[in-house]
Image (cartoon, rainbow, N blue to C red; front, side, top):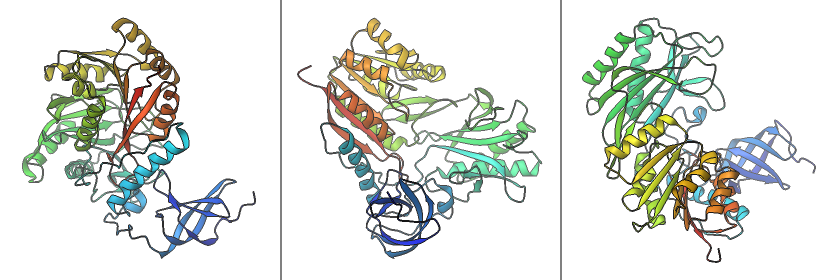
Length: 464
């Protein structure tokens, strides 16, 4: 195929669709062009930035015909940060886009087509994240800053505000940076491996108002750590915006590896007891530094309630909760199930799950530490065939061994929760061998980003 465009040349195109990352899609003579910030229905003059044999990338030079869904962006770092890639689009339109993304995957992949439900959005899609992870570094003047990485780079953009993070996380982080500056404490340098603080991580219990502050440090030693702890405590006492919250704990996380992974394996409690609590529905959950806990608890309640609705438990079922984390889904299911087993590979998460069951007086649940791929078959052989399986795997989805074991076991129902619809639909196609995909419900866990969470109900085919 002859490529109809050239790099660094301008063209006028119609945006015919939006891709899975929210980018606009145009075609010239059947050749695909991906255009950042383009919206379906717009006519634009674009500049070609990169050309490959199959597709090109372009940017908008001029919007000739603007979509009615385009809005003014309210964030000054939007173009560089890459966090809220859909912030230029009216919110309800983003919900329809996410439904369309999942529907297109279903149409292309599944044998039996199904209409994807409308995306469940947030009533107030701002400041919804309960966890902030801010890198610490130097600006062009070699002064310490805290912020976010620029899109596709490790350049740190200093933030004044963020419309998806809890506002108190920025207040705390700036106070820490001020202390670093005032005391000439060096910050971590990726190139040299020298310096101290690498990241500031803030976790907030949205309903309990409890706060955890994690200082990710390059090694055991942190200069003036006692003084820094006192400064953070005093900020909570004196800052009116923080006074409705409770500083529950401050932790030094030791990470001296040359890695993009934020947290190291060792935690040192500098203040408090090392954890916070939050509530989902009627349940209370303990959250430690290493715990995975959904970052949008408001939508998580909706997601889990929808999962329970799909499961339609009667009180007689044995339930298997795969990739159970700190036990949230299994505990949600426990009051309507006969017995629940959870499997999780992260040992600290299993410890938290066991504590969470005790905390909520849940006695019909058992948590097992192990790799789902390696332990599922053994768990089923020892505990018996489950009536229903919940899965909430990582972004890579289910492995072939796990899918094979599920197909061999033939539980009557599966509820598949996923943060990656592409791998979810790939797995659903394999599960179609014995299961009918009954419902797919997208939930907007991450407003104004291209991410979408889904909960899917699968039912064993009658002939099986």
